Length: 431
Image 1 (tube, rainbow, N blue to C red):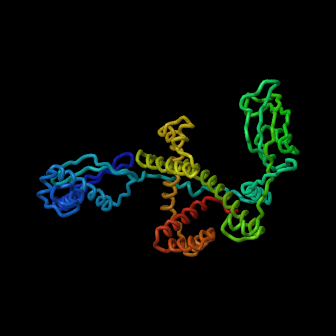
Image 2 (tube, helix red, strand yellow):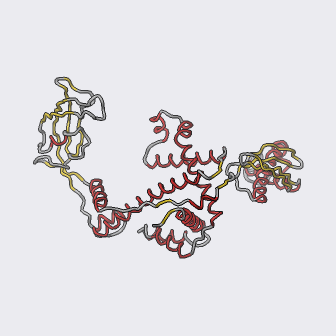
Image 3 (cartoon, helix red, strand yellow):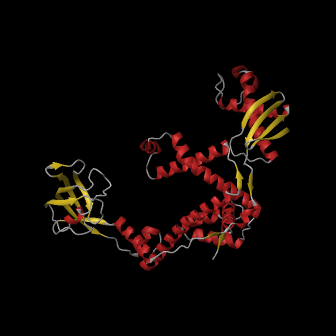
């Protein structure tokens, strides 16, 4: 194989590659084998051995030659990348078949862009955010769990109380005129949730089943719906059902259902505090990284070209799409609600995120080459133990332990992540 290499603008490497007739002949065998497996030739069962002359007569030399070149180009492309030690950031483009015998092709390959980072990066020092969790935050988290798992049991007598759920029919009036969008039927309302206009729910406390109420409700001047702002109204309400709230008890069994660990309430509070701390620390780190990338961009020369940016946009878009699917929302319907096409959404909403992420990845990769932060076995062991501690299932733990072993790609990726984290931390003051 003969290779001529030329560096072109926009991070494009041009390779003109010539392959010997003997090597291309091997691709002809691949082409014949492919045709043979998929051939429909009278007198031969599919997948059986068919003589070459019959395949040529059935499909024609021109078709076989075309397929041979396709197989050969695929082999040439992969071999040339390996020989020239090139890592494409987008699919290579065959710009020209210069000749078929010997086979000679011209390929354009987009590679990672050149990055220049001024040595001033060594002087960047930023402050880390302090993360703390208050007792009130833990209490709020527990209350949110209580609310989520609260069940309601119908009460046949007695009066409605705060946090009961009442089922009501409502009609709103301004004088004698019924107001549009105020009529509801069989509406389940948790008293104290403040989902309706201020003052409405308070009037229903102490009501009984099948009470007919007339509630004087004044909409605030700054009400979010301008059509109702500052209006004096009367709501006619029929109470059709009252249900008492039954909150869950934080027993070890209930906590095990929530987190997979049998804990008493005190230890569960500790766990909740750790979870909130982790979330706040992650959010703080994202903010810190954004500040760092903004500082580094000021002293970095970096241009992003078509292929690498297009791939990153697709990657970010697919992540958004997957998140939508997990929330049981179809991307098609979401775009319709925004009155945007997929192309417009990618350009206006996805592209800025893709650019920022790509800039960060490339700068971080370049700095990692310059600084070479080493990761010790002790650091890896500690990180793996931290990851494993997050899981309670023995089956999951067994599988994870099999993944995080030296030489495994998960182990090596973890090693890279730790080195990047150490690199990022070096830009922040520890005190």
